[in-house]
Length: 139
Image: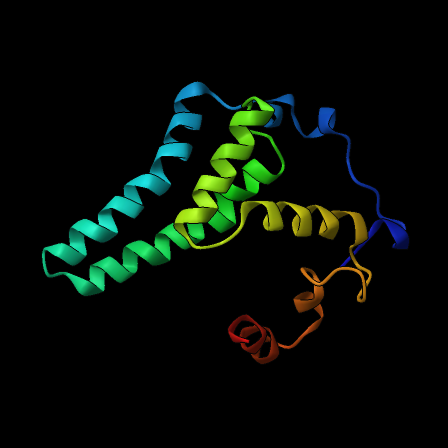
């Protein structure tokens, strides 16, 4: 992995495109609503005798929250007020039985400390084998 320490530099946002700094209202609404749709789909599918699809709804919900929407809320890049941002992060993480506050603290620490092996527990899996990384997810 290349880092700024080995001569590589991050391109400025203006070179990447200012459109990366904005999100449309419809896109924001879909992003924020989709986790709740998955959450409700789990209960609807479980109640109507579709356990495999219900579990699939939880898998999608986990990916959408942790890998996308909650991550956007941690970085406060959805254009919401700080209060709305914190409340939505807490709510989305709560429905997955996780803490939004802990996620925010650990993830922002990851950005501040990466790639320090001792100070960045979130990034430590990047140095493991695939098998070890999967095992770390279990324990």
